[in-house]
Length: 148
Image (cartoon, rainbow, N blue to C red; front, side, top):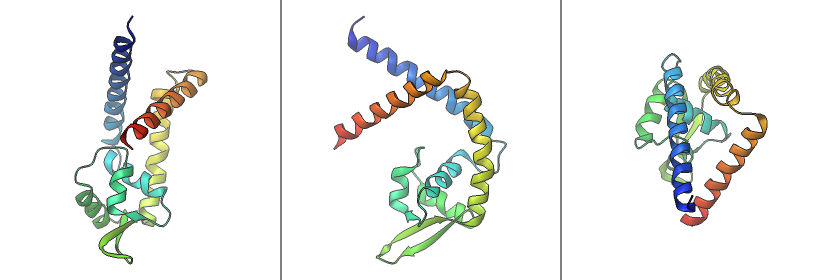
């Protein structure tokens, strides 16, 4: 099989697997107290202990979010995140986790981690999981280099 055809088949298999998994995760989130997009914001903010600028947040969330500012505004209204002016730039906004946001993240995160174990961890062996992780990281690094 030609290398370009193999690359196409590998990409299609990866994309279809990702879509199937995302659909299952989205179904799970329908029964939880935050949406999948809100969880993504909470998870991303958990890795920024001092908060992050709103414009930087959109670069780090895992899901595509064209209207991140409106989402963050709704999350602030529900007490999940805080929004404050950036002291170094009057035009900027710093977004951070509130205590309520941390609690929701912990609660939903446990359920989401269990779903990941069920949907991904049971389908692959530990060696396959390591290989998948390493391949995904390699693909991501290759795209970062190509953009830069």
